Image (cartoon, rainbow, N blue to C red; front, side, top):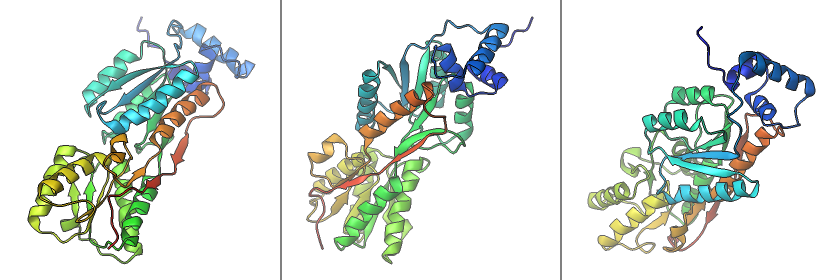
Length: 329
């Protein structure tokens, strides 16, 4: 007999409830109506669902790059909060590789994961639709959005953060500002550039994208190369807004090698406020990354415990951290 594999999604469809409700019944949560609980248990019994995959209070955290200090701060917020509520985390990096991510989901699904926190970067919406469909546990997309309806998201208002940082430079008298972009296909990058342009437009400042828009893919080496090219080109500019702090380090290194000083010759603003940024006195935007990680865990626990339905959208407000990498003209 051709026996179809029974998943939480199939049970949820038959019972006309959410996957989270099915998960709560399987884990003995009392916050489920008795009638619904009985209906789910009848389906489980008749379909032969294997209940051995019991929730082990594990949250899977999946990130693109474990070496990135920005992600390290998020992980700290996740781990501290998870431990506070008796949960542990399993950390994995997929290095922007879809095959690695796919293999991970196939293997990790068998150990009783309570929920997933994913920082996406692959610009393939259909792929994430497939992941959501197959998952037996709630998924929170963190920091970067996916263009899929009814998903759970926790992040920061990137547009507002970039707007405030650009406005800060404009208020200091800067009009010729280079924009150092990250990866173009990532939602946070698009939002930051949108905020940057919004601030320029509100102050009637023209932006020649052919000259003043540079792409460095959130990478130290690429930003270093781009800065060297900017210096060689004799481009007229007084400030640089970088879409992440890591690129600021590459910019600073290239500038200093060419005899330029920050902020005396170039004003520099970054984004993310990673720990090393305070060492070089970098003015930057804090995305509240620790709070992002904390809120992602709380969102998963609220879904599991039935306190909220899915389709969570939490957007934290960033703030500019003023140090000494900018000067008034």
